[in-house]
Length: 223
Length: 255
Image (tube, rainbow over all chains, first blue to last red; front, top):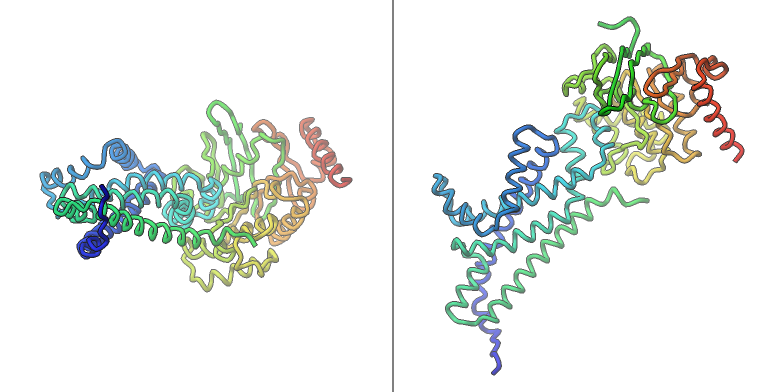
């Protein structure tokens, strides 16, 4: 028995899939952006060993990395509203993914900061730079450059993990596809379609980061 | 406030790294405009001493005063001290992602709050002095070691310090580049800057230093004007050290 693969079905469902893709892109881009900010702020707190805050950040990273994402999403969606924080499905998803990606980015950026030579920190200190100057002018531009590949990894993971948000009913790409599968049982068509769509956006994200790396590497090319 | 003409005054300074005593009861006075060369065998504490002068290393006992300010382990105080004290490192430590010009202006604009225009004007003035104005728009990685070190000196000078510290500024350089850096330092000495240099370059010491400070095992063993130090060192340890350094130099010259 052969499966009758119907391209026409993909074409017919494409508008719905693209709606889902748009939600996936929106939730991912916002979450990636917030997770980068969390990563930088958290790594800076750890870099300067700010009392109390540094321990809080350490605990947060440990918690996020030691628990599965799905319960984290449920916790944000159901738990936070129980605590009085009313968020829409979309923003619950953004918050959950941002907290998740942020924890990983703290470690990514921290690794980059630690790779910046001690001598540069001493040079900055000798020029009477304050910690904030060192952070902004030296540690960030150099450290982020070093941690960019691992940050790309995390960004791709955030994007792929947005599929988990179907669990709280966010109509992102996977949710739409599963919905159609339940209705029409065109399983292969749907998975082929979302496979290509996910591959496509991850590819675009990777190209963007590679561009960024190229720009940041410019000073290090000799001659 | 101003302790006579003393720019740097160190009294009873001791420092430990864990159980290891790196500096033992150091006393040192440096007058305004004086040039001091600190030498001694490796591990004698000379780098640690200059690094204590601008608080890159903190100290456990004793008192350090630089340009009228006591060096204390307090962030604001250290910033005040470091505004008056420039430092040049063995490994240059230029900011690699910035052009030469920006290395020279970044401190002026961000810390001294000068306008970009004024900062660049001063930067070019010092780049002329260290003879590399044509490299202003290159990145440090595109320069030779000697050029990078001259940029590092210019970067420090752009903050218009009252004292310059040099921590083995030529030790990471190829022999042919040592000369250009020493030349820059000699010219700086001629301009009246107060300088404290840790270096093994005895030719430079003889020519430029007002005083040689010889250290061994965390102590200042001998302090003397160069003529006296080189011709008739009082301590045996200094005599041995000089013999080794001079032999090395002769060997280099013959090679």
